[in-house]
Amino acid sequence: MAQDAQQQDSSQGHDTYARLLSEIRHGRLSPGDRLTETELAARLGTSRTPVREAIRLLEADGLVVHTPRVGAVIRQLDYAEITELYEMRGVLEGTAARFAARAAYPSEIDEMEAINAEMAASLSNVDQLYEANRQFHDILRNAARNRFLLRAVEAVQKTLLILGPSTMEEGSRAEAAVAEHAALIAALRARDGDAAEAAMRAHIEAAHKARQIQLRKGGPA
Image (cartoon, rainbow, N blue to C red; front, side):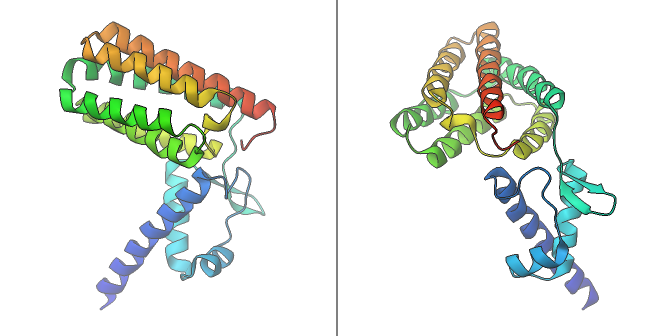
């Protein structure tokens, strides 16, 4: 019975963790926000045990830190850390694009092209754009066929969640992202690793610039 209860708490903890990750991604929990077990348990309709487990997992991800006399808070990134984060994303995802040019199945490239067409058709819907963009990059990373690279990218992606909502609503960023994806797809179809990596690095650099504009305007981070 005790083991069953422990397993249930662990399962609920991971569910609560996923819900808090979603709130961070959508900007409902922002950098500097305090995570109080009792408040979160009441709001999420659960006990304090899974909330405590979720906070522990967020801390292990580097998304939560403990501040003296305050407790657990969503981590804040400074300007230098954000720049380093995008630099690392460019290196990792650029490498993923190079590997994908060699290893991607034609069906995966077709799927990426279809998703990019969906993005082009929904430029005014930020939520749809975010989800389609996430799927596009997930397919690319899986097409690289390198599990260690995938884990490294996932770690960077989790830290990016701290920055809050997507930059897709920033000016003409969504339209530009569609064009950048198209350049990447062309390189993948040509099996040109150099061009694929260059296209992805340019894509990440453009996303970084859009994030900088968002931050200068007083955005989420």
